[in-house]
Length: 54
Image (tube, rainbow, N blue to C red):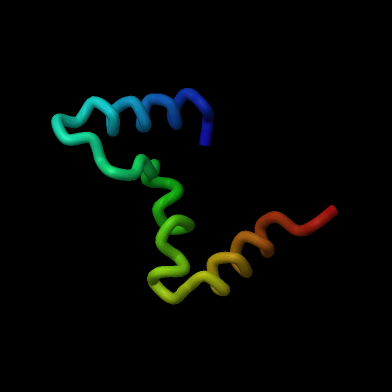
């Protein structure tokens, strides 16, 4: 995610009438809630496939 897009989204979240208890950009939500939703292992495997070690 380009830094400018990240900053824009975070600042929009801070500008809400009621600031959320936790600031999580939309693109990070799948990672943030993976463990709670029981899909942590699948999420890590997917990321590993897209970013193999050097």
